[in-house]
Image (cartoon, rainbow, N blue to C red; front, side, top):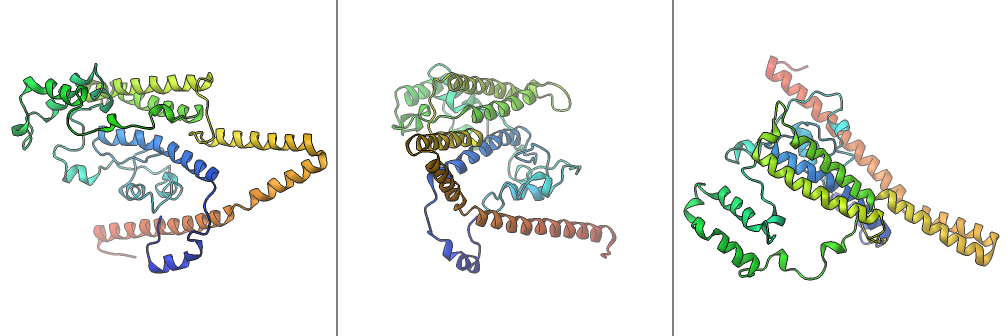
Amino acid sequence: GYAKTWADSFENIPNLYSARPPLEDFLVWRDLRVIDEIHWYGWFIDYWMEGGLLRDVFTNKITTPYHWNLLRQPSSYSKDEAAYDLVVGNATIVRPSYDPNCVDKVSGGCKPIQIISAENLIDHTFGPVENRKLAKALEGKHGIDEYLIDESIWECIWTELIISKKGMKTFVDSDGITKRDYNFSSEILEKMMHELDRLLTKYSTDIAPDYWFSKHASKDLVELLKAHKKSVKDEYDEVKLGGRKLTSNDFLGPRERERRTRTRKLRMLEAILREKGAEAHSRALADIEAKEKVDHSDFFNDLDKKLLLHRVDGHTKAAREGARMRKLNMTGQVD
């Protein structure tokens, strides 16, 4: 994250604008963020379906309020620093708890009244039905119902906005890049399908204690997830069969990007070998290895280690202080 104090800012002045990061490094970083976002996608759905139940983003395990607060500060705590096994412990039995905002600030809690698909809402076939679902969710609500127009003209309003495109511009009216311009490798698409399968399995079941599939919100969610899974699977098949040609600027994922980088280097060396001979080939290989070492990775690795040690020390102190306060509340004595 950014510097929190003047001293931190002053100490890091030498690092300010010292160099532009290579494009390749940015693409590697971006691909990893996309993989994290796949986990956040599933976590977001679980959060609302379960009424704000506190869960870890990456393991889906029930977590503590302390760990939850760390996860909500991604600019301050990295994924490794806020790892579940580090902060909570895989063997720890955690009592379920809920986001205080759901308890104190959301009437009726954070459980969904209705699930609306933005994609269906603008679809010319499914749009009127989705529009009606939205209106029904608002109907009868205090502070809203008195402003809700008559049911007889709900579809008319949808037609004017979506079909006739009257009113303000929306994302549907955007020009330029389309969804087709964003390509994902089979590696990332596999991770998407894995997360979708997890959600489909969970919300398609109708067993105790949740009886998910007996709830209308779960049924709507499952139908949307099935549609998303089909879309991702179609794209996956297209990539595997060569229908979508990936470039280095696409979302490749760590394994695919590493494979392409290795292949590119081998081709460079083969070309040098053909043109210059074995001796030049050896010199070129040594030059490439030397350049790879000058990437300042040691600096960032050392910094990560120092930050991690600092966070671990903070977690330990927080845990000790919590235990001390619990003992004080229970006995009135502290060691």
